[in-house]
Amino acid sequence: MIISSDYMKKSMQEIISKNKEKISEEAAEGIFQIDEVEIAKFLKQIGNYEIDYIPSGKIKENLNTKYIGKNIYSFHEVESTNSVAKFLARFDSPEGTIVLSEIQTRGKGRSGRKWESPLGGIWLSIILKPDIDPSKASIITLATGVAVAKTLRGMNIDARIKWPNDILINNKKVCGILTEANSKFNAVDYVIVGVGIDTKLDTDILADDLREKTTSIAKETKVTVRESEIIANFLNEFEEVYELFKNEKFDEILYDWRRMSQTIGSYVEIKQPLGISFTGTAVGINDQGALILELDNGELKKIISGECIIPEDELDYTHTLDNF
Ligand code: BTN
Image 1: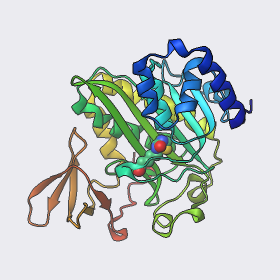
Image 2 (image 1 turned 180 degrees about the horizontal axis):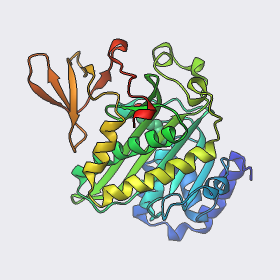
Image 3 (image 1 turned 180 degrees about the vertical axis):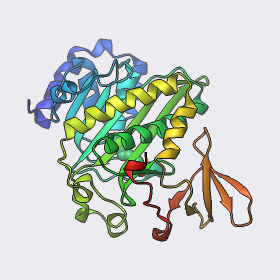
Image 4 (image 1 turned 90 degrees about the horizontal axis):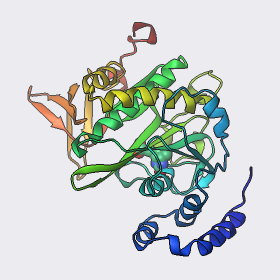
């Protein structure tokens, strides 16, 4: 079904004016804190309605999950699927709800960066409501990286994870993950996991510095890219690893993360703001997602954030898929 934005706006206005008394002050406040105000109000009023650009029926055909992906909102264009998901999370959308869009006009990357999201990618967010201590939320990002890497490996692609949470093919970034958590009284209220996978992205449209570091599945492999299948496979993998997370089997998640990591064992440079940088061998990762670096003087340093650069001559391709 195709819905123009004019049609959508008109429908939203009608729906909102008919439901004025049902929108509480608190909800109205929440509404005005996010960008996709109109879309979100619309969604709230129409319930589980599918706009269905990337057909959710096709995704569901290949899903074998219990709760991840049971509700899918699939758009043509939103500012950011994470923002729409946040809105939905505030209004009691169940755990596992997915927001997808073909295009994002203000896609969000890590560290406040913009995430280029034209046609040619999978831009999706998952709403989670885990009953956990907020300090454990970072493991969800690691778990998501594991799920993406396993999905691509399931397509016979040699995908690796680069700390903190980029997925690489041939040392170029093909996927980024942005986790946003909201906590109340030291308990997690909801977590939004945003995943951007460049499936057929035309990397020529990117700025010079991004272009050389970014790639797409279509560019690096001969695999036939079917977005709905990739999404379903990813959601299947995600539920499995998320169940490990909920059962506090963090070691199993970290084991998989290390096994598929491009970073561990490499001599890397970590660049932080204000020109701070460290070089050393990445020897491990802890359950907060911090990288453990062995500096040149033998000292072990815990790195919480930064950009990780792995020089070409440090890349080790002897661990092909067959070794796993
Ligand atoms: C990164 O900087 O590596 C993280 C990029 C995360 C992008 C995804 S695309 C879907 C979701 N919605 C957003 O606005 N961002 C995430």
